[in-house]
Image 1: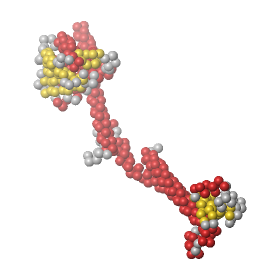
Image 2: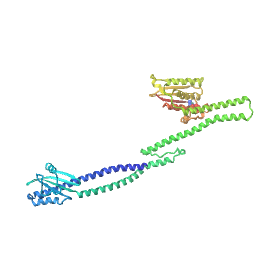
Image 3: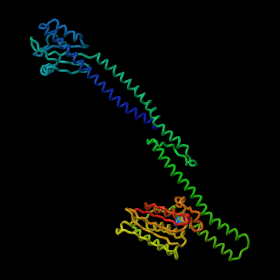
Length: 450
Ligand code: ADP
């Protein structure tokens, strides 16, 4: 069911319940008023009977006429009975209508009694006359009143149905007007395809309604989609470039050596070259696999970051920085908890190692400085070099797999180290920041929450 129909149905249902309560209230009130007014008429008729049979003798003709004028007409199905203080019917015979003695006693006690018997309403009054005390009981049916009430009920019923019908259709119109901005948004979103992810929905700066917020949210989502789409395309371009280089070299070497007869030494060199390129190809594919697979699935351990950084520096010094200088600059708190995090030490070792290896590699033997300091609830590790630097326009790109900047091409590498490091740091809820100037140096900050 469409939202428009659901809204108008809910609206109609709510209105139906409210209107039913109001109409039922009016009906009951009207019925109550009718009953009260009929009881009054009946009481008047009982009084007229009293005046007629009992008080005529001591009443002036004028006042008797006035009583008659007030309640002149016999009511439909009217029966009046008069009883003396011994509960015997007087003046009017009882016929088939017998009122029980208990009722006459009740009237004597309470002086006035009202009740209804089916459609019939009954009034009993205690009448005091100079000839004795009497009980007068009058009963009749309010046919006119009931008929009017019945008509009112029918009018109410038809107006109720018409109102519901009108409310449903008005509700649909209002729902359509209210939902028009959403249908417009849907139409706008429908025309956005993978090839037109740069399109955005119109948003108003003046309005802060939900529809505008929805458009802003969809635009943000589109921005992320466009970004990841572009990243994906960049990944394919960079990956094919990185994979093609060793493959072209393998193919070239093999073709050249097959062109003419070669000495065993030359064949050996060609094969060594092919092995080197294959190893590189294998390394690239392994790191790519590593990048896709890296997750923290082993139990987390407590890691002292100063110790970890120490061992990373040791390893890099030994394997990659023969002769170079890596300085360590710690500014540590007394409380070791402030430099201890929960994590996977092997993964963090790889992440810090990759960033430090880059610093060593791209600074060509110049000093590399590692700093560590603690903020309120995070540890900041900075790796600073004075190497080739990075163009600020490339800060976002260097974390894409296989991306290598132009000035880094003379150096060996595959463009996987940084994306892998960033993924590991993010798995530890950390983040990376880069500060760099070309030909001056680079500072990588690794910020980890403790
Ligand atoms: P690579 O195998 O090329 O080192 P990385 O993924 O580790 O790949 O780094 C991606 C790119 O980021 C590098 O090719 C280089 O352009 C840039 N880069 C990373 N670290 C540094 C650094 N310390 N100095 C200058 N450029 C760097």
